[in-house]
Length: 434
Image (cartoon, rainbow, N blue to C red):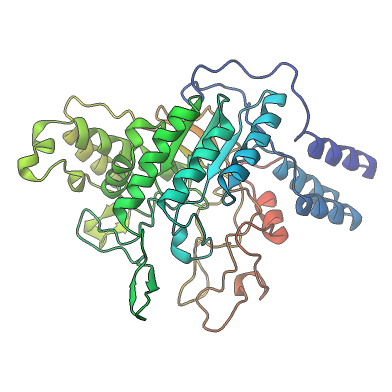
């Protein structure tokens, strides 16, 4: 293709983020429940680092790669809000809502500011306490107002809960501490599972009241993290039955197929444990029994993750046996922004391979759409923007800050643009970007 044609293509792709669609999408009565066959999600203007990479690739006579990055950047993806005062987040969200309204598009907004976020790992941060978070999420909701939006409420919030205990009696590893006035190390104030659930329930209700035209989804983790019963239990206690549903695979690489299967199982477990037959629900036997829901962890193989056809049939039959007359009705969305090549299997030995952190050889997956073909799957979305780093991974190498899987470089901090990874994600897209 001629250089002038590539320049025109790249300019068109970059400009498409801000182009106005005069026709606009259909007037949605329900954001996520209406499975439109066309894509009407908002595309935010590309960040300077993205534009720089496109320009650099053109200057070095790599027009096809420039077009790939431009396509990546102008595909609809979520906008994250992770800090600021209540007034600041209100203004930022309102600005995004205004831009989306001008283009007659639906924005995908991620609220990521819960206290003890990511338990002080690569994405550490968040509001200082429950009161601060309530004020922040109120500002977030007021920024949306009466506009239409998809809200992804607090990734990591149900996968990592400080001082929680699973339905099987296991303690969570996340136990943040502080040093008190006497010099004693004590649990951090506000870091309890009860407060985490209270924060999320409050957020669901606040969004319903102040931003009534939003479709709100809670953290369902991913298909190789929490077991089916544990995910269902946490979602119910966080208020999922008053929300649109839950999200899966944010910032991860699990396949769309296993994500859909896991989502269906979680929805079946929620229905069985909350509306199933009396023997599942009877409080005298310790119910509702989320712990009776079979999961993707196969006891016959040492509790390894198992999505084989035979084991899927076993889990599905077990959950159907628990449902009685109840019907699975809790919907979900799947992050397909980086799962086109599936999860990474390390080819070297590390003390901690950090398979979730900037794994090499990955590609973007299905483009955002509501046409999933799965009744309970409302949409495939790009929630973690492809090309943004997961953090400065070091694969557990003691004393190292470099990433051996990326040629010994220091990976960008979480959320920063990672040009090498972005190009790989675009080049190895499945389906191909073009």
